[in-house]
Length: 164
Image (cartoon, rainbow, N blue to C red; front, side, top):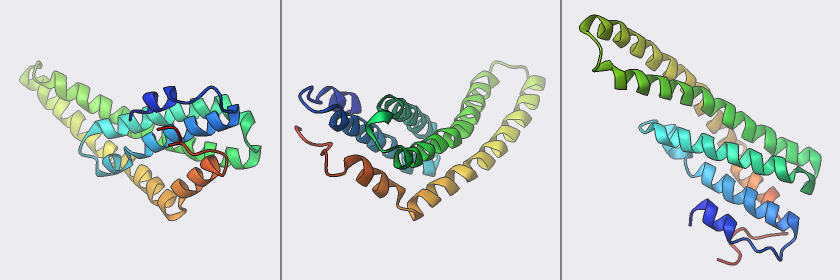
């Protein structure tokens, strides 16, 4: 079920904290569902979707910050923010490369030679931008970030799959 549908299915009869936990967990799971594709790097949409969802997750976390203990919450918020930032560097280059590749065929041969060099340079920059992203994912996996995040936000208070 899509995140939006799962969020829409949240009951207004539950406490704000329970709903906050459910919404945060739903966005987190959606964000992490794009991680393997982003790591693989064959389709730029995985980085794009992971970044978009990380921004939605941060917005939800901003809205519900008062529902959680500040110190622990900030730890997870900072990690999500670093994911967004790291993905942003890769995504910006994805967009630039795609734009120049699209316009390439409309250019003269002389212009194509210049743009080809630019595209090659951007592709190298892209590879360099992917390295911190891959290192971040590796560090998060080593630290069991996904498990810790879910344990904190699911806790004993709610089950994000409840009512399905």
